[in-house]
Length: 115
Image (cartoon, rainbow, N blue to C red; front, side, top):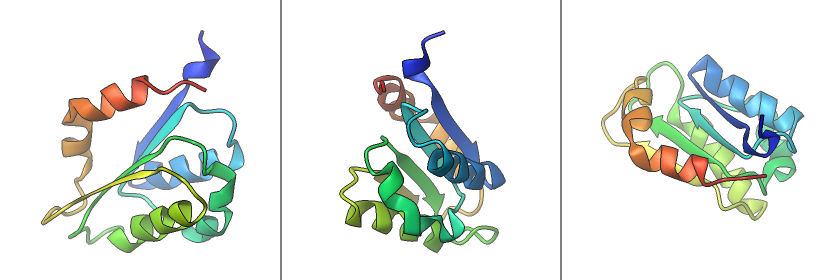
């Protein structure tokens, strides 16, 4: 197993878990892709993962998990100096994972990352 190529992604509650796990183990993963999740108060620890490649996805019409959760974490990461990517899908509700996981650019980007 190539431990320099461990990737983490999750949707909805799994998106919350992606943030929590990355913040708890910032040196473990090569890249993360949280989808329609949130970091809660984890944004105050954004500095811990500022160097971790990250691509955040969310629908702007999400009625289950507000898009502001992703916007807040992305803003905190940018403030910390991160190059985190953010994709907000206009008109999309909670199912932002279908577009994200169907996007070959996500997988090309993710698998190009190495710790």
